[in-house]
Image (cartoon, rainbow, N blue to C red; front, side, top):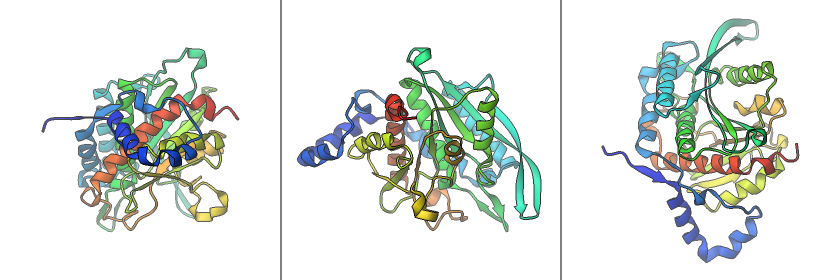
Length: 332
C-alpha cells in the first residue's frame, strides 16, 4: 500500500469553513487567541497508525504485562519505531529500568522490575527560555488471565500509537520547548513507571513543567474525547477551549473535579504522580466502556475512524500546549 501523509492544516481549514455559519457563537466561546496549529504542517504517517495499533494489541504481545516476554516484545517494537523516527534516546539510552513492589494482595508484595522507554527532542527557543514537557503513555497492560489474552487495544496501545504520531509530527515541526516522550511501564500495577520517572528527575535536580498524558484514545460511541486537568490549572482552559471548534472529535473538559468522586480522573493514570509532585497536567482519554479491561479490547473491535481522528486531535493539542506553555504555567 502506498503510504499517505495527513496534514492537519487541511482539517483546520475544513473545520473553519464549516464553522463560518456559526461564527458569532464560536467567537463567544474562544477567549484565548493566538496563531493556532493551522499555521504549520503537522504531518505524520496515517497508514502506520492502524498498523501499529494492530501490532501492539496482537495476541503475540500476550497483553504486554510488566515483566513478561510480551511486554519486552512491545518495548522492542516501540524502540525500533523511535529509531526509525530518529528520536534521540534520553541520556544516551531508551530503556530506563526501575524496581518496585507489586501488591498481589493486602498481605503480599513481590519485587519486580519495569522498564520505561524515554526519548527526547530539544526545543527551538533559546535554551534559558525553554521549559520541559513530558508527554506520556503507558505501554503495559494486564496480560493473560484464565487462559484469555487481554490485548488492551484501547488500554493503552491506542495511547502509545498516539504518542508515536506526536513524535513524528514534532520531528517535522520541532517544538518550542524541550520534550521528553515517555512510554511508561507498570501503570496497571500502580502507576509505578510514572513514579520512577519523577524520582529519576528528582535525582537529577530537574523538574518537568507540564505533563500531557494519553490513556485510552480509541473508543467512544459519542465521538467524544476528554481533556482533564483544567480544573487544577485554570490557564489551560482557554487553550483547550480554542481547540474545541477546530478538532475532528467532540473535545470536552471535565473528570478532574474532586467532588466527582470516582469520576474524578486526577489520580487514575500516569498523570497522577505528576500532579502529586506539583506538576500541572492534561490527560486525554475516553470514558470507560464495556471493553475496558476485557479480553474483547481487541484491534478488531476498535472504531478505526474515531481513533484516527482522536490521534489527529492529540497532535493538535500537543502542539498548541507547547506553543502556549508560558501562559499555561504562568500562575505557578
